[in-house]
Length: 175
Image (tube, rainbow, N blue to C red; front, side, top):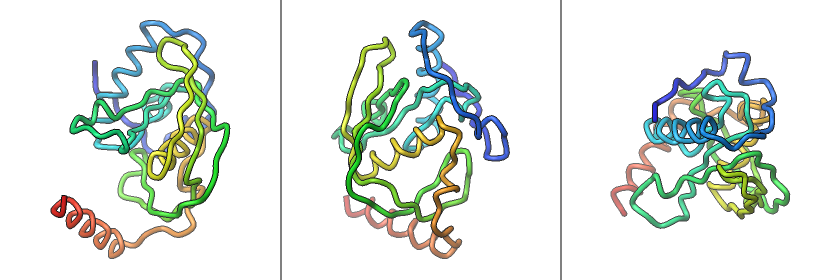
């Protein structure tokens, strides 16, 4: 496994639509393994193949609803994912590993059903809620060449970010 470079928002390939994965081979497995290591190193909630320079429909999301102390066990691999159902709405702060330091308020579905394949091509369906639904929508957007900044209703100021970070620190202490 290897940690890959994460492309930044000025890279034009991030705005291109990814092609479907058709071969579920060692190259795909290596890509998914490298993406997993890169995601863990970056401490993100999701990562799409285009973010590491590969225009294929593969993404990882972290499901915080899986109760474990190991981040690796919370990561879900999605190959050729598509959202087949959604309901509700949630608005909240969102950022992106490809757009470091920029956060904004984005409204996304509160619950989504994702149809995809696993690394071996086996069909899977998962329901994602809350922050995991947000991550699934965000990463699938990447596969379609869309950055979260196109959905931002309002960018957060440095003061708002500092306040959010303090709230996160307080929650960590409370746990």
